[in-house]
Image (tube, helix red, strand yellow):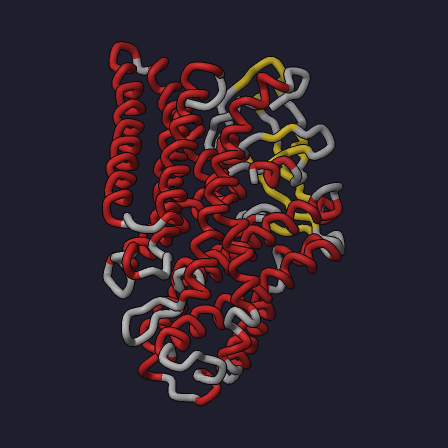
Amino acid sequence: FNAMSASKSAQVVESAAKPDEEQALSPSTVTIIHKTEAGDESSGTGFMGIGKQGTYMSFLVLVVGIVISIIMQRYSPSQINLSSWENGCPEGYENSCKANSAVLRISFALSILFALQMFGSLVFAKFFDILWVPKIVVLICVVIGFYFARSEVFGLGGYGWFARISGFLYLILQQIILLDLAYSWNEQWVEYSTTDGEKGKRWLVGILAFSAMFYIGSFVFIGLMYWQFDGCTDNAVIISITLALPILATLLQTFFTDEGSILTSAIMTAYATYVCYSSVSLNPEPSCNPTIASSYQTISTVVGLVILVISLVWTTYNSVRKIPVDTGTGRSVDLMSVATGGGKPKEGTVHALTVEATTYNVAGMRSLFFQVSLVFLLICGYYAMVLTNWATLQSNDSQSDPRTGRVAMWIQAAAQWVAILIYLWSLIAPKILTNRDF
């Protein structure tokens, strides 16, 4: 997502009155000009940057949609009595079916919005940033239409499986996002340790302390899962692989490669442990799943939402934190540092930060907006799976539906294994493919 910042265009034009003297730039000496496609110019004090408005609005709409989904899931079984909401629901599972359907209706509507955003950006790159009022109106109209649709449209015979596939893909992507966060965290604290004099060691101690916390918490929780989810071969296989792969990754990272860090491996282990718990808690066999119809299944939902929020905020932040200057050369600077005196232009210079409308036609811009919209589309399916326990149903007699639970269990387990294998590959690839830049 940092690539977004490298694909916008601006040009700094300077006319120097005293070329031999340098001074810090005062914010008052900066003039920002926007050029529209019609060629007009206007003050740019409110300019957010190309791609920023689309990213911020996507984030806001998605967060509001998640909140509404949570509210609808809580109250729809008792407050909505339309026959269409029960059509297609298995007998004995009506309440769970209606609650899941409420979430999936909102999720489906959001998916349509981001699909429109995704393909619209391919045709017209500026579409990513504009027309948000009409887009939201379309979203509201779709939600109203879905309110009267039959529940079976949103179940596993319809949108439910699309959401499962989206959730599977985002589970993998989410680990990559969390690893990027871990790398940035590790690099920042290592840098602090080298610039903080004698007190610098405390940053390194902090890295080790957090790493130890993640490892200890993960291994304790894995031990508890062996104890509480005992009695089924499925559970034993999933938990054992969860234990083995992170240990292997940690050993590789520590003793056989210079890639990665102990903090990234620790965060990967903690995330794998969460996905493992979420997976085995979907086992439909009551004899080896004590969480069925208990408050413990709520733990998976809450933790999943917390991790989702962290990854979503980090993704949005990375997408907009830099403003590039020259897409022709690929160079980029943080214009905020210039406007606050961070730069040292020549005395008497007049700066014009000119943003061309044709920037939207820079090679790769459409593809970039397509990818950002695709990530939000995948999140739409994933958050619905977190809230509905991967579209599983809960009956009145506290027995999970075996058909949906077992499939959902293995979907999550497979996503976890793929994510860990990707991390393993990132550790060993530089050693194997020495002629490639990783």
